[in-house]
Image (cartoon, rainbow over all chains, first blue to last red; front, side, top):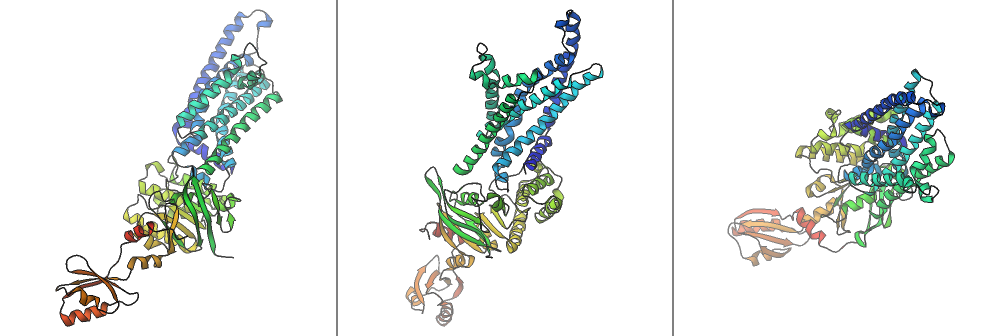
Length: 248
Length: 310
């Protein structure tokens, strides 16, 4: 049943130009950064004389692309999540889902999975774009995989939070603004506590947990953090929809 | 197995302390069409939302074919088709796409989905609109899509909240025929403002007002309310009121408008024949005699101003 809801979401995304446009724009932007990365690599490396200054092409270009991708997605994901529930509420289509023989959990998970599938397309594209480096060099696949996986988890967290804010309101734009602000705060919490990196507040920051992935490291504690983050916001969403059924 | 498809037991719904629906109980049998009437804000839609599991009742139980809506919502919802007041359609999809999704979500087996979509489209007269975007359809056709969505999985109970809103007279007739057809095999609950519609389509009627059930009975009972024991009689040369009142069975005579009289009589003692005979004998010049029907609107107004029955 979850997959049927996910299929419905994907169909809605691709039925309008929305899905296609977002994919195309994001790919154009990231492709641009990829090209700049490759160009810069030669510039920087021709200047680097000592071996210690030299970095591999995978890390150099990978950091450029994945580094910028998370900030671009900070804007893109709220735009995608904002419509998931609030637009259905505004168009009064929620009774269609609520009166079908599916549980609220399935509805929320279905919507989440649908969005994740859409975002995975983007991640697969980014990955494919970066492995074209392999044509003329020898790249570190492990580094790219860890980065892609980290980005995937990060986008999953963005989406879970976005869905929750979408379930709070009737206006998609308000949902987008709220989720953008909270994601922004969660990402920059770390820089706010730069002087005290071990403060528990800094530990909440999404970016702190993304960092190990961006070094090519898959750390289980970060995995658990992302997993809990996603589970928390999805549960809150389910509870919020259930409250609506109870309170009306 | 009993024939009961839907049971509502003492449903009550509070909205912030105000009772939108008070202690409403009713049952529905297989093959019945139940008309649900009431003025605006009477609690029709709230009751329907509770029946379909879209809203949890504050008190009371809903059972669909014996399955409790609160305890086993999935099983109960699988037996229901619901058309809410605001039609729940995804306008960015085509008719086929939308109905396929509806069939999938209602757990129609994947092999039968195409067939189910075809049948639903045929029943609602949408076959020639398959590939059109719902957004581009006229209001009436969108309403048909919404009805098709409610009947696609062949549910045992179909709940329609004002299904004929926005349709033209021909479409209304088609939809009424469709409702009667569904009502033969399954059960239908239908809410409406259009009173003649109830008389045409429904077997039973219930009227709700300010959250209370004020009338509950078969359509014949409603008609009795409607006809009453009255005759409307017109004379060219009007006799004295006393002469009319002396006729056997007559309880009261009122002068209506110009040369017309409203004659009340005792139950099953229609004085029609006596009046005709007397009129011929005394040459009163009888030119009209007919049962005086209260309009359905009047019955409706009367009932909604009465005290609740339960």
